[in-house]
Image 1 (cartoon, one colour):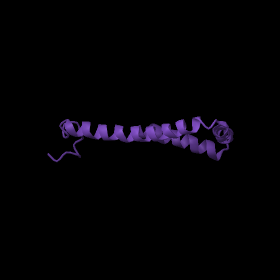
Image 2 (cartoon, helix red, strand yellow; image 1 turned 30 degrees about the vertical axis):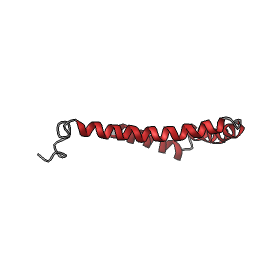
Image 3 (cartoon, rainbow, N blue to C red; image 1 turned 135 degrees about the horizontal axis):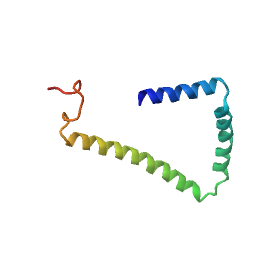
Image 4 (cartoon, rainbow, N blue to C red; image 1 turned 180 degrees about the vertical axis):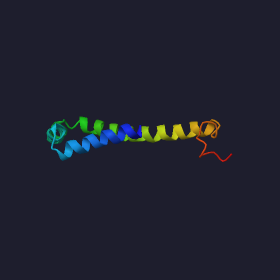
Length: 86
């Protein structure tokens, strides 16, 4: 995973330095998306704000759930040898 992520990040960096097609696409999106947000009606703004905060708390809840799940199952069983105190 580390290797694949590093290669993807390197490819994006090369595309940025070479002023490739992704940079042009990003500039278009950077101008279009804020314009769409400004044109939305006033009734949609509270819904968008609520979605932001609900998503934020969902991520925090998922992290807490995963921590408790991993601690409740014999913590030393699935950990690598360098993490165990045995």
